[in-house]
Length: 243
Image 1 (cartoon, rainbow, N blue to C red):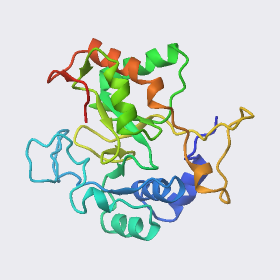
Image 2 (cartoon, rainbow, N blue to C red):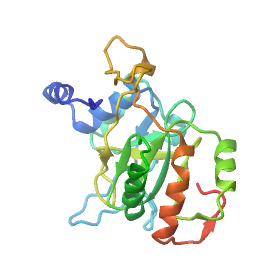
Image 3 (cartoon, rainbow, N blue to C red):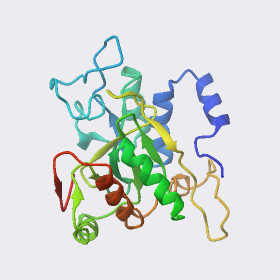
Image 4 (tube, rainbow, N blue to C red):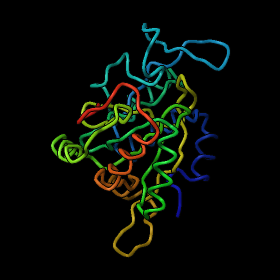
């Protein structure tokens, strides 16, 4: 199955002088119609541990969260995205989740690896998965708070390490640099599969909807994600609903 960010496209964009980060940001915004904005980034430093560029020394998402502008500024406008990354070419790419964009579920890296293996064994088709050394994030189709609440209400216990990113949330996308390490695709985005069963390769003349990667429904994943998060341990207790 053809990867959406194909090799030919990558090479042509590299020749244009754009960085890999701005190329990715423009693809997310203009082709996939996912609203993005630059993350705060990391302080310059030496060594493997990198501190967040914000004023909080114990930042929970170092480098990988909005700061200025705020989350409400996320956009799909090519001119704005180009301006942001022209001024800050290595800024992390932050996706504002929800609405018509992807939502997400994230969990610690060890639990994430086990969850993907369990979902593969069960024959569940996965969408894009973003990995950093600390956490793995599974992108899913947009869901409402009501739908999510109903799904989690059926669980006996939801580990606090399992986080849901819906309306008003955000996640970092590759190839962003974060405190724990650079974000990468553990599972690459794939085109939607039409009724014929053959993958639909995105075309320059196709509509925005056709260019977006396929996303699974959160209901098909949540049971396994809760189970694997609980099995690998959780810090901070649990709840019926996590953000």
